Image (tube, rainbow, N blue to C red; front, side):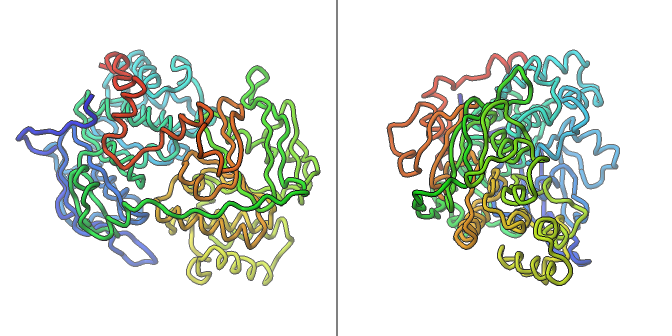
Length: 558
């Protein structure tokens, strides 16, 4: 199977953007976001958009739908989709196009689904509204796509609510929903950010097959260069709203022209030294023989045990649904285990957080994957950071103000510049730093970092890892680092715990875990990390006998 299809027809491009300028409102001043970018995209082609946070990738992708976020406006240029001038279309005409002929897959699935409706109802909404197919046909199509996306129990999966599935499963469900009307153009905005490496392969293969089978055009936005290399025919590099360069994927990978592109291509080199294990001390956190689930009939965690010592980072890795986040819920007291216990510094923690003392609550904090959904959008930065400092430490007045300013300095953000901003006025990396400040405001001994770099580009993610490393040293912190990014594991972990289907299948020091022989499942994870080679996914699928995976499901979609 060829991974990509290039339209060699002489027909006009499906999407044409010329000299597009977009401005955004900041502090009552209009500032440039996109500065005269051009773009051509044919049916069946995939264009990769890359660049660091703030480059304008998502803004340009949304503009391809004739859409701008609140506080932004298209000030110049033209955007044509299949001969239609999108900038002259009425609101009603654009609504007829969006969802039906142009679809969008957002980065944050958790923020994109309606929590009050089942997944199947949300899938069927667009096909019914646009009169593409009947309800029964839409449900059958949904099941085919769920199966293709390797979602559990495809026939029943759609009956679940968004909160009843994992983040990776929800991201796949959103990709399926975007395909519900078989659109001509899909904008994929970091669609595999929340996915583990093995699931990512399945979704990437599915997207490639669907683009090929239906001759669909796609814009693929990502900060993961190795992923873009598997998906795109052409790569466009953006920096602060300017086009840096564009070339075919093979040419771009082999010989990028500009220094900025070369800096993006450089492999992340940051790796902290493994911290020594202090013997003779109680672990900061110890999980002992924990079995837990969300119903009496189904255990998600099965006899899980591991320990985290002072000033150490334990990375917990595994596929979506392996039990990583469920383990975090047990530690924080949000889910009571059916069996087993959790202790802090040798003292048992009550299973339910409501039974824990304020001091016990203070010592276990979390930094969440999606700062967009973790930070109250109506509160200013000073209030977001002040609340835990006031609640756990009893600070108020001038002392509280000084503490908030000190915390901002600790996360390398100038207080006078940021303290009165709203989360919407910050970049993704800045919002994640606020999440870190909010966690350390309680002066904890232990922090759960739940995929804290997965939504960030490589340059910003490296800055966050360095910040966490420095804070660990300065504040004597211990971390549980939930991640599917094995490059992050290599960068920051002291120990690694590998989970599958609720079981710990392997654990040990990082220095040993990346040296063969591995457990078969660990070997699968290590072998699923994308490489900067456009043929890597082809070779992997062929080696696993899966180069034609999903063809039967695709046939059922037609």
